[in-house]
Amino acid sequence: MFSLPKLDYQYDALEKCISKEIMELHHSKHHQTYVDKLNAALENHADFQSKSIEELVRGVNELPKELQKPVRNFGGGHYNHSLFWKFMSPDGGGQPEGKLANDINSKYGDFQKFVDEFSAQAVGVFGSGWAWLLDDLSIVTTANQDSPIMDGEQPPILGIDVWEHAYYLDYTYKRPDYVKAFWEVVNWPEVARRYNNS
Ligand code: MN
Image 1 (tube, rainbow, N blue to C red):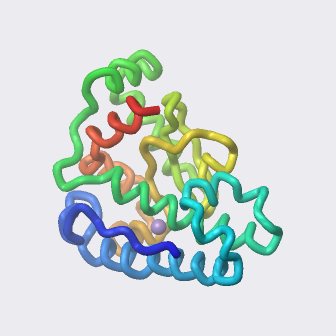
Image 2 (cartoon, helix red, strand yellow):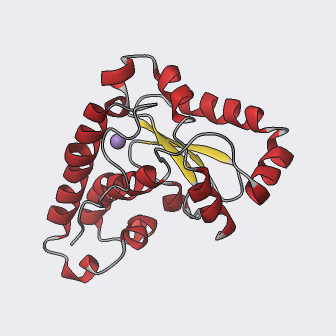
Image 3 (cartoon, rainbow, N blue to C red):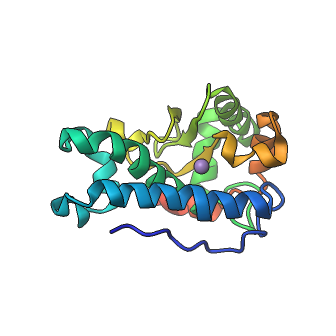
């Protein structure tokens, strides 16, 4: 059965972007609920309990009919949040280095143009969803808890949760301010590691 992953930092460690209060609710309540509901959905499906979360989410459309919706929503929620916590660090911010930096510059012109494009896409998500950077350095968005891997993509190398639960207590309706602050906590060494392994 699936379980809530431990964070690599304290709840108050990302306050350059996200308050302790949001982090605690987001991780210990929202993410925990996705895990619990995923486990409940799989209770009578022992044959799927040993799969990794990535396998389950990637193969959502081939699952038995009654599992497709819970795995899409709660499995997607568990998968997306597990990535999201890794994409941020108390030592984050700044700019990427090495091959990732060079390739971002080649594709977008410079780092700031990339930040502007990613931010515009994140701000532009209608309703609840995510913005992602894929391993070909394209930027995509998904609705709800959908993941790009449901469409056959490789795992995203960066992503931001733009559900209101991710920012409303800190920023109310000002999603652009949350997205702007996100760059202060992006864990670029982790993004680069995922990019180089892709
Ligand atoms: Mn969330």
